[in-house]
Length: 365
Image (cartoon, rainbow, N blue to C red; front, side, top):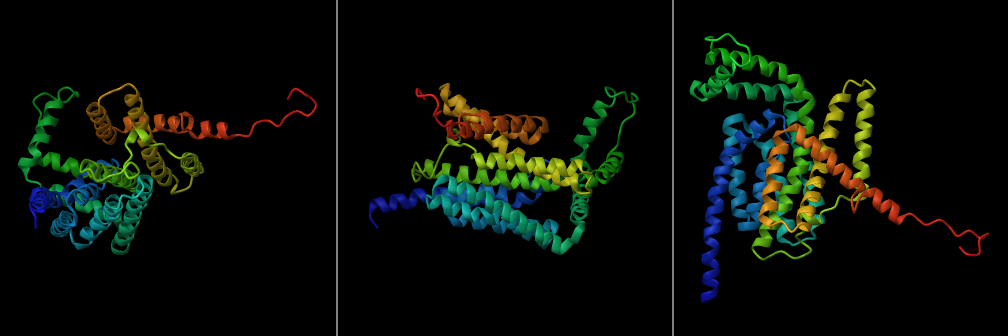
């Protein structure tokens, strides 16, 4: 081995070791983070798969395997073997296709389509496994797991939340001097979880589906950005967000699907609200991405620095996940951009529309 090969090998050991350590830590925490995401009823990002795509593009398959093993063992010990399998199938398995696409330098939008399909397919497979194990009581089983995790929390972990509630009681019209104890808080929390079970049954499918769509987009973006940072991407294999445009057929299809869901809900169907909320969240996630891309293009045209663009997009992403109103606003902006923007569906339709035929009665035509 010559000196240059030795230098390359030495330079690769640091990223590999650091990636493995990060993978092990993230894998242990992944089940807890997933549980928190689901309990918040926000788009449930498959964070393990997104991180695995980055680690695979950065350091190869070893940290991806370490992440899968750590997550499987952690989930198995905390929640049981079935939950571990569901977590790996939904979150980690789809990242394999993303890593293959990024390292193989496939055309970027082919990778994007494959990544979204992979995460959607992983979610479907995981739900089928969960249904085969738990039957129609999947939501009830999840709520039982959630109750068990909260009951397992020590009083010291709940005390800050109790102190915050006690601090807000006078401002909310509570009796001054009357305070809540940890025991009272546990009892009220249990009642809240009982009331939330019906809401979960309606909202959770949409939170999972929209999370899978966003996870496919983010994993492909991060993996190829990582390859670009290593100088191993091409102009075809990596396209920044400013170069993303929602295809016209996808725009019209998403709006049509949303309209079908709305009609189904207004028809009074028993499952209408659940179907509509699932479709609305999935369509909203796609249009929110379009809105962020349009914003990035505007900032690029205004010569904003790349670091500022990344910071603003990142902050908006986090805020939209936590604030439903902001996520809805982004979805409306994205829908308008996808319809009326420079590459919008209606703009393309009018540009490609055949011109009126010449009038034979007018010789000047």
